[in-house]
Image (cartoon, rainbow, N blue to C red; front, side, top):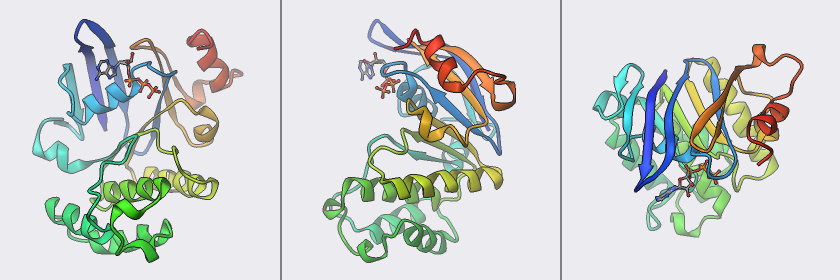
Length: 230
Ligand SMILES: Nc1ncnc2c1ncn2[C@@H]1O[C@H](COP(=O)(O)OP(=O)(O)OP(=O)(O)O)[C@@H](O)[C@H]1O
């Protein structure tokens, strides 16, 4: 469970996120939708505690600056943050040991095979394509068996088959009880798998809807209506 209350983030005098509340429940896929500049990445980075902010954020019941919280969530950033001169296997070893995970090797084998990276596992990251780096970033977030997963624009750089696999993976993790929060502005890709949607515009949450509560209106229609078509 990810609980955000009264989150405000300013860059200098500019309020990028303005007093928002949101909750991503266990076993659900929650999406944060919004046009460019709405404040989605700022929200996700605040939840991971990479930014200073005002407000209260809990992950799996722990304040997000605690070790317990940090051990319980995986983060897939918009642009992979990897070590150019380490191989995929060395990244796995580094993260697995840093998080003191017991079964990280088995999980890494599983995800490396799933993402078709077997032949690349001894290559340094610098020699991988953009999409491959994105897959490495994903598998590193997953080998720690996270109870919560924060994902910022997950499909950027992935080919159609990998997008399908990733959507399937998110659905499987949700069924295992993981709380998943995905930030995106690409509704079409995510439209089949979301359970709860928050629509952001200019730093504020302007709509909050569950799939059951959607009624006749599509999420896309709601998005354009709530964001003035931006
Ligand atoms: N480091 C920064 N310094 C100053 N302003 C920033 C900084 N990072 C983001 N902003 C501003 O904060 C606002 C929200 O940015 P943010 O990256 O959170 O939006 P977003 O919804 O993730 O957008 P996108 O879909 O384009 O990634 C924007 O107006 C942006 O210009």
